[in-house]
Length: 612
Image 1 (spheres, helix red, strand yellow):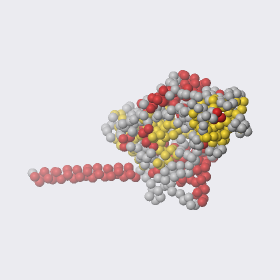
Image 2 (cartoon, one colour):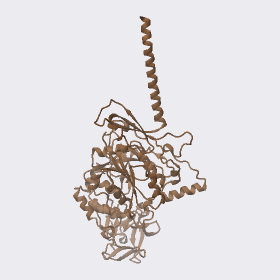
Image 3 (cartoon, rainbow, N blue to C red):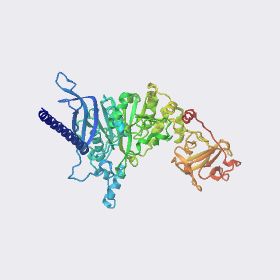
Image 4 (tube, rainbow, N blue to C red):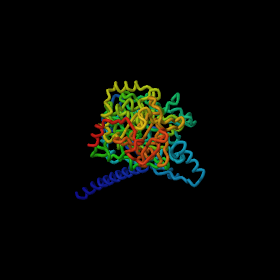
């Protein structure tokens, strides 16, 4: 009996050993797949994956492996099986050992031999033309691999909603380098769940580069979700985005610049935010692609937040400086300002906000406008740490290379008039103008009507709720209007004429043009963007630069003196001419140094709350 028992148990043991070997083999094979391929894992619980005609759509060049994790849920009348499970999408094959590793692979810098004069010339030409090292970009794969840079917390299978809405992705380009446009598109297709990308709408803003016409159309023809629409005339970046948005078909719209690289998981994290609240704008965490080496720098972005100063120029501030604190630094966090071209928004909400201001020209300030009105009109915006997108920060703004107008100034002043209420005068003073000049900046009545219909709150609400860290606009001795010498009285005004460079005292004309001055947030003596500049030995007028230095002045309200901050001398009337100006050692007892000014003060209550 004992012998018979052993003979029966031996096959059982062999079967167990065989099962163990199979398990180990499958596990090793799985590990081989993971490490040999560029793999993105998307969780589809309880997403339905159909076999047959309605199977998951794949982009050209993609392979997918469906692994059922549970029993069949059942079948419908068409006898199509529905399963629960994970979907692995293999975006690109592993590196072919027959060829060298492509330049820039896995986000590494591209190495080039700048000692070769021909290469150095091409690098310089690309930097001048595109604002980044096009030569290095052209050396890279159009589908370069990037490392997984998300925090493990972001990869939790239950982190996001299972039923996320599809989105239309809008990408505007104008004479963009071929390699970065296609790398942007491939990064979207390769690293986004196919069912979440309804379409990619490429907007050509009247590019003149020939390879962005027929060749681009032919290249993209196999990619059914990608379509190119071409603006009939040059619209500028802002209006081109509106043109693209209006030509989408999804309720959710995602905007990207044409020089980005999306990483695994970028889209799900954005859509999750908007799916939970359709009046919240979701902004990805923007990592830096070095414009010179094309290296992905991903160790800094998570610690910064979008903000700006009173010049409305966007910048990155440390998250540690913000009033609102988060126990978990990986959850989406309230953000006062977006960088610009990368965000996801509900279409209906965007339309209610009036899209962008179509009176904005070309480029600039549209990001600040959308930031303000999203908060003021019943919504808000958040930055999403689990969404990581690499972005080339170009040197300069190629969109503005041939633009002779100061479009950022015009857009800033339009924004201030519509959205900033009494604080618009801070902006007007920075630009040295007395009030909104409709003849120069156009009518804004339709924009004010949009704000009224949307039931938006006042600018104070935005400061208190979204941006309590915003700097107080108050400076000592701020003034606006005519400048009179106490020696000459109110009949004579300080005047600057650009036509002949005259700076001095002249009979007042009351026109608020050549005799209008502001002492503003940047401590300038500013008249229509021209500032009084003192080098320590020479007094003159130059274009305002907002960097203080020789253009910074301290106004002493109790004496009426105007003192150079840097050189500690005071502006004075030259008594030899009673027309020209001079600089003297400050002496409050000297009448030529005293000026009659129209001082201004702001309600600082919202900013005082931010300090508490």
